[in-house]
Length: 176
Image (cartoon, rainbow, N blue to C red; front, side):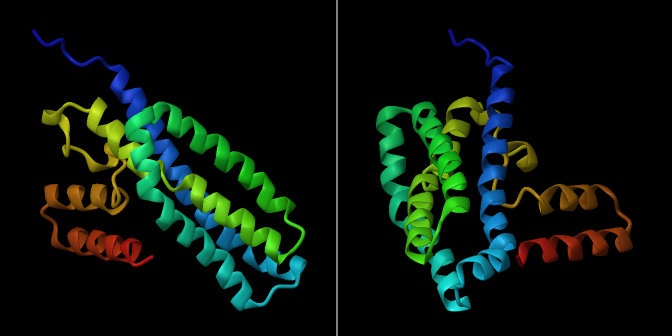
């Protein structure tokens, strides 16, 4: 006999979605702060490009190994480590004194944040019953959750003009 799923899963999904939003937020923040970083550390635009690239490189290199680690150790402990790691490295980014230090911090930052999405995917797979998956992409925090609720709403409203406006808005969001 299988026990019915509890409502705790909604809190787990909410926390995992918030975690995903924060990972995107910290990536966007470095771009917003780039002009000040360039000015303060005396970097060229090419050097700042390497700062962005080194994060992505580390993220790509360590995403699969971190996912394997989460499969062995459990997503809760690995996600806790990821949150602690990127919290410390967010502070360290602001404390960087020179270009090599900033490169090292951003590489470590990407390395530490790399397993966040595989862990979130595993968490959703464990906590959301199969029959409830895919019903509401915004609730699950999947990749294109921003535009999809608008498109879902547009499908329910037969008004053509409304549909066109929502589709254009979703297209703008996806191009970023």
